[in-house]
Length: 262
Image 1: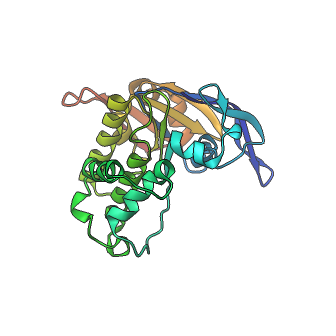
Image 2: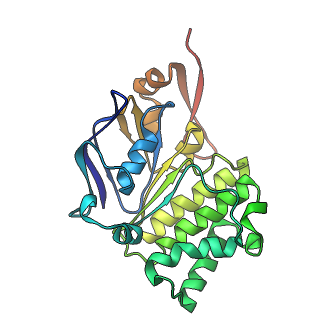
């Protein structure tokens, strides 16, 4: 279980995170939403251990992340950053295989290679295996890097690992946006993974999330089922919108209709 306790992160005289407490549950896709500058990426970086908070603590189970070295963290969590190298002169399959490095430390086994192949199939990028990454479109590269992250925690024990995704659908067309979030949701449920994804499209987030967390000004404003968060007055206030929520008969999920406030 991955948890944050009273996190405070400061930069340039302002608080990017303000006494924020959050626990990610195994088997759940938790989608983090909020306006630009809300602190979403800062929170993800703190949870990953890549950013040390000024106050508060991140814990992996009963261990503070500050007590784990880089290799230990890499075996417990995988991160898909918002921006990836776009000029890599490596085959896509070799980039995905890098996800297994924390486990084999330069001596890959047949099992590692099989895991990389399975991860590519799950992320929908098997057909790109022999392509040089630098020749792929932004959306194709996003799928390759998702596969790399999946491969990294493929063999982690259920309930003891996390997948952290920073805007995983930003470069994808509408079909792959849905496929990617469905993949993240199913990976969470089938493997007992705690998954956190930052998503800007609120209706897309609501369709796949088990849970939504609303951030604004570095503070957690709402945390609960998508229907509850979309109907909260705090959401309209955070984005400065007029909002109403419809019931989508086809999916059984809420559908947000928003417009600029006067």
